[in-house]
Image 1 (cartoon, one colour):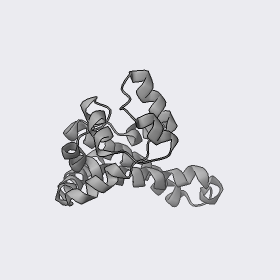
Image 2: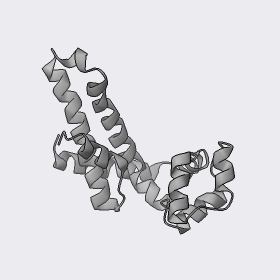
Image 3: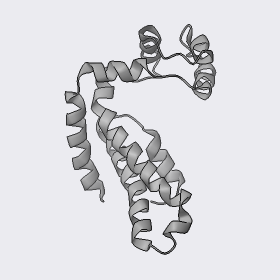
Length: 153
């Protein structure tokens, strides 16, 4: 798939994402449990919301107050921007994960070159969609960097 196809897909997914009810985003945000590695990064940046360390230790989800503080500090995106990129980023994540099957099941794909190519194209497509997310929403997503790191572009 090409960059142009990824752009068309981005606009369709973004439009669908914006139509999802607000409860979807509230649920996603307030069920998010921050990892220890993320907390360490927030500490290094000097941007750890009050009570977050204890929440991480207890494996508790974000509170609305913690999320607002993270948005205010620039370490989380606001809900309106999340609405724009939620489904495109989810699609990029799924495409990337599908492509990773090639690495986990290499033996299976040594004989089936067409299937191998489809998996590699899935990683490339994840990259293309991620580029469109950055281009149109100004949000960098992890799957762009992961695809680059795999050197399959």
